[in-house]
Image 1 (tube, one colour):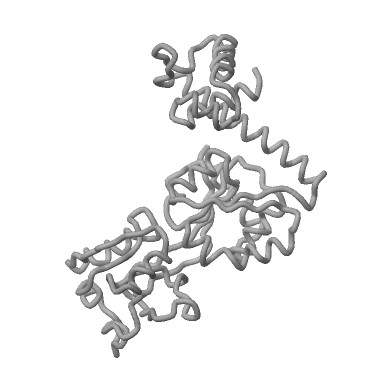
Image 2 (cartoon, one colour):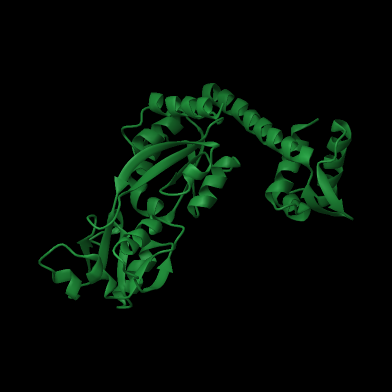
Length: 313
């Protein structure tokens, strides 16, 4: 049994049982992957994949268990490399953060700038996606840390740590009737206009919907986006009233727009960090977490990882 065989096996499963795509991803040949997986099946004495001719169409019951253990073995092999790097390459290494656009654009620049000043030899990579996509990146080992508001709690493989609470602003063009109110804005006043806000999978959209439902209102959502800058662009064109994360409004940059506080109308949301329970974090990863969420010390993170393992037992 070789780690390379396990790597082939896991990648085929990750690519939806498409051996060709797995081969392309791993920069190898389709026949080579197929041969190694068959050798592994012969060694283990069980069939891992169900095949229809040359096509892989499903995973057998023992195959699902083998995949689960293979993923864990590959993660532990990666952990061994990281432990070695911790002592041999103290200042260098890599850190991959998976996050949403809002976090990458508005919450992460300052901690990332501080981190790179402290660790100039660390290769930092930011991957963006939906909360589900970024959580899966950490689960499958292609990212070290997930930062998002939703999604992380759906993955028991991930330890979850609260970072900060935030709420929403209504954003409108200068001179808009909602920009000159002499009282706190109401849901009824917002619902009187076409709305532009986040796609349902992003940034607390369910809490926006729930707030309107609770008072019997059905907002006219004319446009959704995953990118706050896109929402502000279309608001500036007069296509509707925007509801965005409060952190995403920048008066010095958002010329021609006005933000109206709406935190009293919606439940607050919490941005969280997700870390795979069995991952080994380099020392600089703990420092990055503390730069992003100063109340989270290295000990806090380690305690959360141990707590998650204990809860899962």
